[in-house]
Structures are given as structure tokens and as C-alpha cells.
Amino acid sequence: MSDQTTAVPEPDKNGWSLLDVMVLLGQQKKILLAILILGSVAAVWHAMSLPRYYSATTMLLPPQQQTSAAGALSQLGFLAGAAGVAGIASGLKTPEELYVAFLQTRRLQNALIERLDLKRRYGAANMTEARQILAGRVSIVSDKKTGLITLEADDQDAVFSASLANAYVEELRKMLATLAVTESQQRQLFFEQQVNKTRAALGAAEMEFRRKQGQSGLVVTQAMAESLIRGGVELHAQIAAREVQLQALSRFATEQNPDVQRLAAELSARRHQLALIERGNPSIAPDSAQASEAVQAFRTMKIQEITLEALVRQLEIAKVDASKEGPLVQAVDQAIVPERMTKSKRRVTALVGILAAMLLGVVVALIRGLAHNATPETRQGWSRLKAAWR
Image 1 (tube, rainbow, N blue to C red):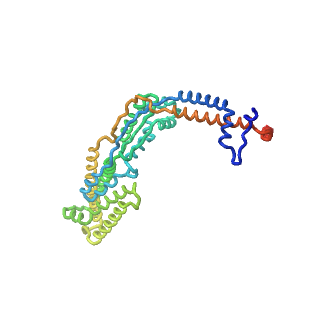
Image 2: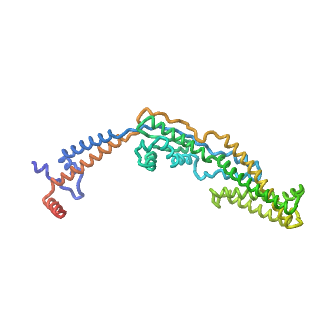
């Protein structure tokens, strides 16, 4: 009777059946249960020793792109199209993606590490390790439907988790204060640079005209000034303005961009128009080469004056738009101290440990069962294998 209960099940032609496996496991149920119980106890003990985390959440509302600026600039003359340079950051699909990227920058992370002394808190050996741990403790997600950004900070200390989340917002605002991010800020920065550049060019042109005027003794009358304007000074300024605009657009747009192609066509047409005016209708007929140089210097000076006036008007529009803006980032919900532990891996760890113990017990039980019920031929094979590896 004992031989019948310990005999190895004979597999059918299709291999071992489920019944055969269950018989083997039943024969080794003691070792199976021992491994399962010991493994489960160890898994639960390890899971209970893991730290539990608190999660503090804050929601941010980034500024939306303005659309009214282009309409206002269209009333300011031939430089109005330059409003297109404002969208330098338009390569991103949505505004919130830009601010998510800002929240993940090394600059902002370093500021948080120094402010909250995270190297010591996390036991990090260097800034790189501290940034890696910080990135694992913070989750930043943007909602494309609402445009809101959700930032969740985890820590074993409930108070510190809220402080970390709110510190992210404060450091982001500090960083944004040093950057030109919004459309009006970008326009203001761009036109400030162009105004400074044009003002310097105007100063140089005035000095050159006074020098040429002193050499030639040329006196610029009102009639000569009007003749120069009719002779293409304003057209020169338009060409210069569109060259600046095209240069700005080329920073973030390819040659296939419709705006780039339109500006290039307008620039070519105005250059052709200027060539016809200067060839067929000269502004004045100077009596000497020196007088001709003085006229050319006066024309250059007038071009810079007209260009500067247009750029200053657009700079004022950009400043007004920037002054109307509220805070760059608004905290819809500030992080508060969480009352409950909301993030823990204890359950998952315990469950995985129990499943691993069960799997190990089944494997060990099957191996022991097969070894115990092995046929003489199988035992001889195992003996030869052992001898070969000695």
C-alpha cells in the first residue's frame, strides 16, 4: 500500500497532467507549507519595516498665451508684423508643458536642495545623487484639458512634504522673474535689444553726418529733407524693419514657414521698389563728391530715426502688455499638511513576497517529489551528472 502512494505518477503521451502535478505537491506538502509560511512571515516583516510616506499636492495655473498684442501692433505702421517674434517658445504644444519643463530643470532642483538642505536629509553624497532622489520623490503632471499642473511631493514627514511642494512653487516664481517667458515679456526683451541697437546706430550716423557736413559745407534744407523722404528713406526703414523681423522669425521657424515666406517676398518687393526709385528719381543732385557723401550720411541718419521711432512705439506696447499680466504662476491649491499616510509600498511588497514564497515552495516541492520518486534509470543519470561535475 505504501509503494502505491509513493510511486511516481506515470505521464501520459501528452506529458504531465495537472493531476500528476497535484499528486507530487501533495506528497511534499510539508516542505511546501513550510516554505510558504516562512516566506510569508519574512515578506510581511520586511514590508512592515518599510517607511511610509505622506503626499502633499499643489495645483498650478500657468499663464496663457496672449492674442491681443498682434491686433494692437497692427495699428503701428510698417513694423507691426514684428509681433510674430513673440512666440519663440511656441514650439511646445501647450503652455503648461513649458512650465513642467521649468519645474524639472537642474537650476530649480539645485535651488531646492540648497534651500531645504536635501543633501543631508537624503544622505546624498553629491548634488547629482540628491537631484535623482528628489526627482523620485516628486511627481509633476499636466492636464491638457484644464491646463492645470499637479505637483505631488512625498516624504516620511507630513509637514516637510507640504513644505517641499510649496517651495517648488516659490523657487519657480524666483526663476521666472529672471526669464522672459510670456509673449509680452519676449516682445519687450526683443524690442529693448533692437531699440538699444538702433539708438547706437543712430548716434553713429549723426556723428558721421556732422563730419561729412563739416567737410562739404552742405546745408540740409526742408526741401532737401522732403526730397530724401520721397527718395526712399522711409522705404529704407521699412526694409530694415522687415530684415529685423525676418531675423527674429528665423530663430524658431524654417524657410518653409508661411510667415517667413511672406516676409521674404515683401522684403524682395521693397528692395526692388527702392532700386527703381533711386535709379529713376534721384533725391538731389549734389555738386561734389563730398556733398554726395554728406547726402548719403543724412539719408542713413533719417533711416535710423524712423526705424527707432517705430521700435520705440512697439516697445511701449510690449511694456503695457507686460504690466497688465498677473503672477506668472498662480497656485490654485497650495499644499497643506496631509493628515493620512497616502503612499506606501507595504501591501505590494508583502503580496509580492507571499507570491514568491508560494512559487519557491512549489518548485522545491516538485523537485523533491521527482527526485524521491525517480526511477532507477533516472537516478543513475543523476549520479553520472554529479560525477561529471566533481
